[in-house]
Image: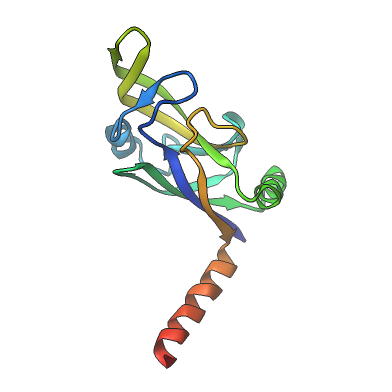
Length: 157
């Protein structure tokens, strides 16, 4: 069974230390790496490379930021605990792990990352970027049942 999560992996607003990741900064990296295979962008727990959670299905730059849709694989023991934490907290947050490739300095303190190599997106408790948050989370079977019910409602409405 998979657990589906989605939300903003990154937004172009200043994070807690004043850094900004510009919209589209990871697009080339995502195209190059892909989302699967040995070099793909990973879904991790707490930026820990020893804790992969499943797979990212979509990473897409939108005006508000980098939108992500992913599946947590609940066959992984620690992923079960993370799913329970997500549900208990009413959702958690996201954070990106990357290497900056091109940056601009605005004023004396604001660093703007205009291009970066995205390595991973992590589920975290406290994000550096307050806008990087989970918007939806639920079991795949529940999501599919809700979609089927909505289709039936449309047919018989």
